[in-house]
Length: 417
Length: 124
Ligand SMILES: Nc1ncnc2c1ncn2[C@@H]1O[C@H](COP(=O)(O)OP(=O)(O)OP(=O)(O)O)[C@@H](O)[C@H]1O
Ligand SMILES: [Mg+2]
Image (spheres, each protein chain N blue to C red):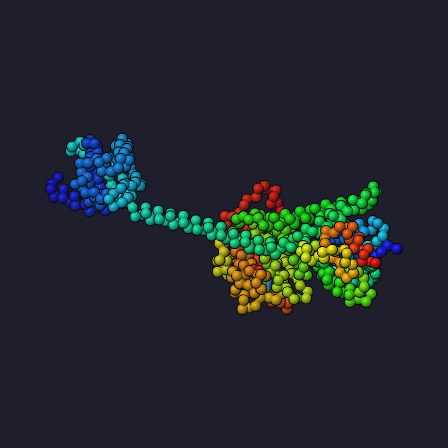
């Protein structure tokens, strides 16, 4: 080997973009090679490092770790990759990806350990920053979710307030039946009185009715994150109508219900979907105002989607596709209709045309949000037939989208249709 | 002769039980009308001594029915007892039975003795 070659080797070493070091295993693993890049990575000059051991240069723990890896490499006689290790330097913590291999020096017979280190500090830090960001993002989105739930709940409590008088009224009728039953029985019972079975039947019915109304209200007011279960549309209508029945009667609104037979089950969060229906029905009642023959028609049927606007549903997680089988619920009133000037604003939070105290303007924005959480779509349009009024149209998917909030049914029998 | 009572309330179960209670003593003959829109027609045909009206009903509410009755020469003077399940206690007169005459309002659930007393006072 002539001098010229040594020069070349040194020049190459010092120009390599990776740190190179060599330890002499026959001499307590003292460093015998320490290239330029290695100086830069470790912030230690060759003059400092050469002739020293890991223990003299690095922390005790780091040195012990390096030594155990070195011995491992020598014992196995094989190259070893260390995907990530860290050292402390004057310029702070550095992350390295290192390769170690054993070598015999044929001229001297020494056993050498060759190391090649790449400085990956920047990419590790970027990665860490990304992790931090994504954690913060998750925390924020959890907070948002929480806030959203609270908002849903607040709006729900608002409608409960509105429904309370009606619900109380609906409970009082069954109670009135019970009291009359008790009064009758209290008057003494003749054994052959044909009224007795009738009275007992009515009393039992009264208890059942009061119970289902109260229970409906309790279920409705329960607060929970959105949780969807396989549900029959008809069941949700039944429980909802119990809660709004009194509002309909009081406003003298006739309700026509047309739920198609054999509708496929849909995945619903029942209390939240009740909230949707209650909001839309209350809106319809409120819009009916002075109309003479107030009438609300609610229908539910399956349809195949036609002419799907590719942009439509972009607001939702999942885009509806042409020819999708969907369940469409329509709530149609013969009220005032929506002023064309307002049609773009009705979904804005706090937009209301109602007197203070009568409307907060949150109904539709929350209703739409809940429907979107069901991968569905809500539209309001004015009727185009000869009658004025509005149609609220809910489109629900019959197959599952990419939503995580599905609760699997507890038992098989529960969802048999 | 038993006194004739017309019961106008959309709650079929309630009217059925009330009829049984009232007819039990033998002093009343009760007719039920569950459709408030037919209340006036039924009243004309039946000629009740007293009419018991529910306040909240689909179609015509108690107030509407009362107004329609007042339009009728034959029914104008028939005493009316209103029953209401409306919660606000302010809607009820403090001493409900005592003040006979124009507008007797009783709460629902109604105590049968209270109602009977109200009927008796209304008929006099
Ligand atoms: N069925 C309907 N017919 C006519 N206008 C409607 C109908 N539904 C909603 N609107 C209009 O949209 C507005 C916003 O409705 P939204 O339900 O968001 O709020 P609100 O009903 O005014 O108040 P809240 O629902 O908080 O009580 C209403 O004020 C009304 O002008
Ligand atoms: Mg509303």
